[in-house]
Picture 1 (tube, rainbow, N blue to C red):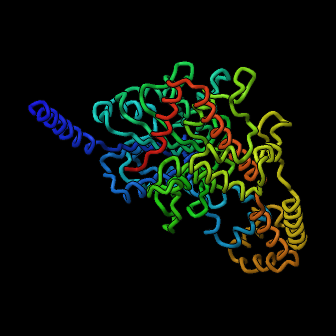
Picture 2: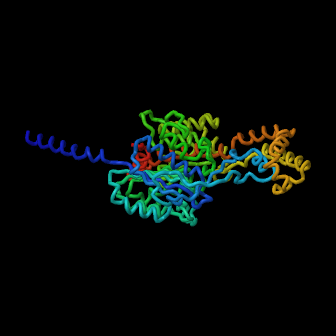
Picture 3: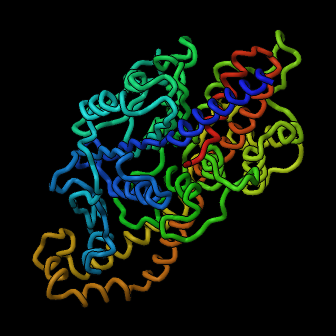
Length: 494
């Protein structure tokens, strides 16, 4: 009786102790955004930060737990690049289109409008932040890092995953250097990263100690989601101000978490396992399935499998091959993976059991030894250019002064003779066909974007097969490490 009472008292004490500790666990957010200089500080980078702020506000995360470092920091200097040619007078648009160049047409700069920026995007800022937060972020807390910036390839062929985040004033931080900053935080702190810069997939190696697979998994629980692989550029980074036109990785990822698009229109939540919430991993799957971009996006669990798992070979005849039937893929797929396989199959018209082979052949991967890209068709574009040149040539025959846009007559067409100039172009017999061809070119599916969807299908298939093979290889430590990463990737904004 006495022993039973002691046990109950002990359990009550433990529950009383553990309850408040878990409730006090919190999320901290570190946002790194902006370009390396004014010329690379596009409006979309600013808009991404603002959208992430909006998402966190909707989720009622206090601003005090958010740290933002953007471009050159808190200054009134006009460093954000915008391009809005549609806001220019019609004569200026037509003069540039037919007689000059529309490159940088409508270019302007403005100071950023982000509230709460702590400082510039610099090495010193990051070092100071991690030093100061090392004693603030607790063992039960979680750090979520969002990077919307530029990036560069590794400078060393021996370490291709040691890519960079480009910082202001042409500074940079590599994967290895970033790992050293993360190491300043408590080992028990969970770290989730969302990165959209070019070559961002190199940062998938933050899960490894010092960023090197041969050093083993980091003792700190880390995971991440990345716009593209370590050796490719990413979509996005535009000076356009219309957010409805943004198609980069984090637009889709954040839409999935928010349940709406940037314009506030609701989207069906990608709750693929029907548990009533959208996880980071489901947001990543939604992006792979939905994004019409050149991105071949990756996550940390997939990169872990590429290091520690393998396909069937002579030494392991019980493993799955890289050409398994489609039913086998579905058998071992998670709900998110199944949704991606089924969705991409529909988009790409893949049917039957040999869908892996169909996707391989569509990318020409076997012939080239790598996942290739088909050349784009230039037919409609060539016709468009020919018509453009014909209209310009006909007007130049009428007004030879248009051969140089700085001639006084050309300047008159932008000032006192605007209507005459606009009517001369828009009443040209070929202008209607020109406009039609222009819309056709703009709406023509990009073969590179379609090709990368086959690659996404193959990558998801590889992850399914390699995950099952890891289990069949039977290394308990590696299986536990993989499951730990998957668990962290399955987190939500709490």
